[in-house]
Length: 76
Image 1 (cartoon, rainbow, N blue to C red):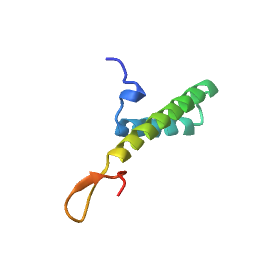
Image 2 (cartoon, rainbow, N blue to C red):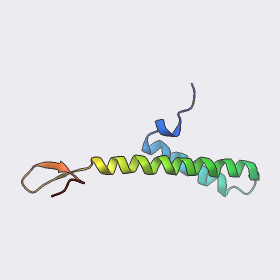
Image 3 (cartoon, rainbow, N blue to C red):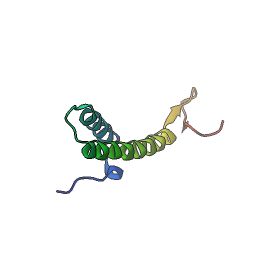
Image 4 (cartoon, helix red, strand yellow):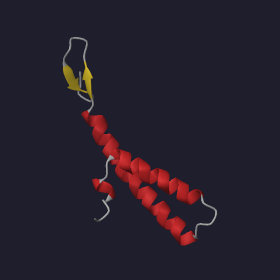
């Protein structure tokens, strides 16, 4: 089975990628080329994660005092 692209990953999966990337970059024995590849993957993951989190933020709904649901970013 092929690996998912960052665009196909869930927010949780992307955070896991970033955690793995950070751990790899903290290793003392990592070669420069491998570290640079990890860094590039981390930057790509952050970009996609930021987009996904922005999408989620736009979909958040707030329960108003009178019990109605409205879009979090909707004008009052």
